[in-house]
Image (cartoon, rainbow, N blue to C red; front, top):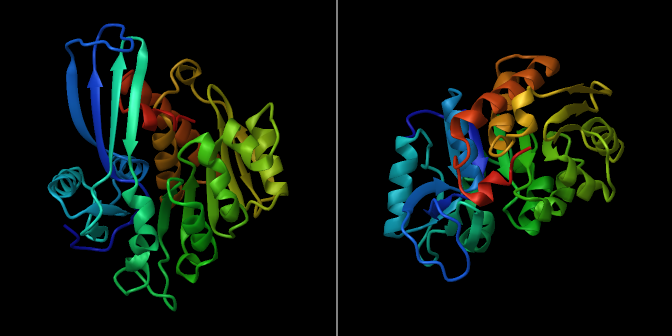
Length: 311
């Protein structure tokens, strides 16, 4: 698919989501009729698909098995506008999968068979050093969307690697439980962190009553750029270069329907800035895009492990 250089790289998890859904309440031992879907998933894939909808040409750096499931996933992803030319194919690791059962009463159970990405480690970064996308002397200079499903060791390597020295690095944790993994990237000079209020509290080892307060504290701790969201309350953009924090309230729909909006918020903000929008305008566009996205896809727009990334 890769006839030209991608606009942005999405580094992290790409897998199959296998989701069984029933329209009735379920409990342990339930055996009911429903629907089973297999969909492309993973944080990096989800962000890449969203960026494509906004008009960019994304490529993913991840690990897939050299198996039939990996082949199917690549074909599906490329139809959806995601360049898979640079991903790592393993001969001995299977393609990652996530399986969940949902009833009318929510998530019943889930299993993440997602070990191959962590096992592959730094192999997924090879295109950034072997000349396909960059080298140590001429590193990638474009945008990178980085998810927090990578190991702490690999995230630390990325934070100190010359391969990322000139990149516009946009970072989001995969879940509050993995937010601490991003500590090595907190003070990276080219990193923009996208976190919610809970994740900001984990990074700062405290609690905040507003996104603005959280952004101010993250800047004090050495962050160069942060975007902090707080559900239906005001979101904040803190910049060390500008020396201030700006805030804006999301449209009212986000007060009760924030599920699934996180990836759209991040993608819309990144695209707005790449197209020349200032900080205030980019923040407004991101909040508006997330608000418009949610009602169109509510409530089962994506599997439970991706819905958590709502901001």
